[in-house]
Length: 286
Image (cartoon, rainbow, N blue to C red):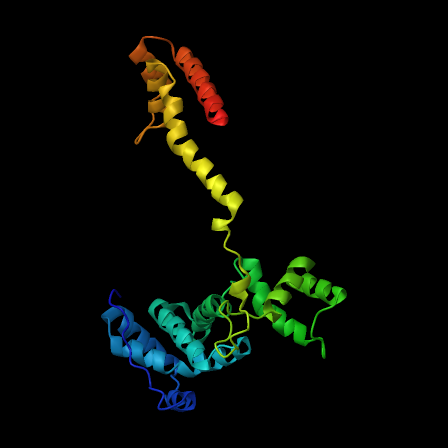
């Protein structure tokens, strides 16, 4: 199937509850109905068949999305991402394998929701590796098994690390990330005029005196100093340095320069080393 899925979902009239009620009104499919729709979609490109497959499984997306409400993201957004996963599942579903769409789609729905949470839950990404993602989505539930605990103790962190197959330090770091909060650099617009936002404490070092002098020295080395050092070389040495180090395209090889000056490649290398040493000395003295 090459055409993209463009399906119309039930609209939420005013709130998420209206959407859920509308989605739950779509009847569930029998296995025979599901197989027939899947074959129509994949064999004939019947988008209406794909639409019926998707609509009949919207309640599955709603149920799965509800399990991720603890991350502080809108239920409607989680459902929307889950619907994308459901459409991907319908597009890839093969009824000939003897697996119902509900089982096949769960993976795709969860994968889309996981990706959405990781991208949007915090401005600073909390999980970047596969192990961190596993820790991210399991730490909350495991932590809840310790009733009345806000912060894991060393022993509890070790137990969680053992169960998840990660290091204790990784559990502690992830817990710190999960319990931390993002802070706006610009502060609260309702603060008084005398309040300071975090951005006020971030110094701009560009105009610090020593940094200014350092930038001037670098500019001199890259400009006037380098030009003077090049001009101090004899024509052959200058030619070698320019074609080997100051070229715009591909650098000349030792053998190419050896052929140009009718000397050995080793001799070109020696001249190059000596020229660079001379230039370095001039730049350091500048």
